[in-house]
Length: 101
Image (cartoon, rainbow, N blue to C red):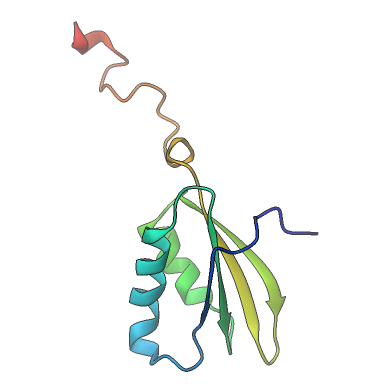
């Protein structure tokens, strides 16, 4: 299956970065992306723990596609979804508009 995500806006080689600094760096770069933009990560192992962190921190706000799956290197393309993809609530009002007069 081919990836439907656009070419990456930025690329991050995580291999030379201290493990304790990786997630913070990735999320700083993700937060800087505009909806529709992507970034690509290069790592020496499957970044599955990062994906779990994305599920917790950015639920339904991102796309995740493996570009390369080891064994020596892993590449993942992460796309930022638009604001409407993060919420399926329709009307933002608590009662569908009834409280707004």
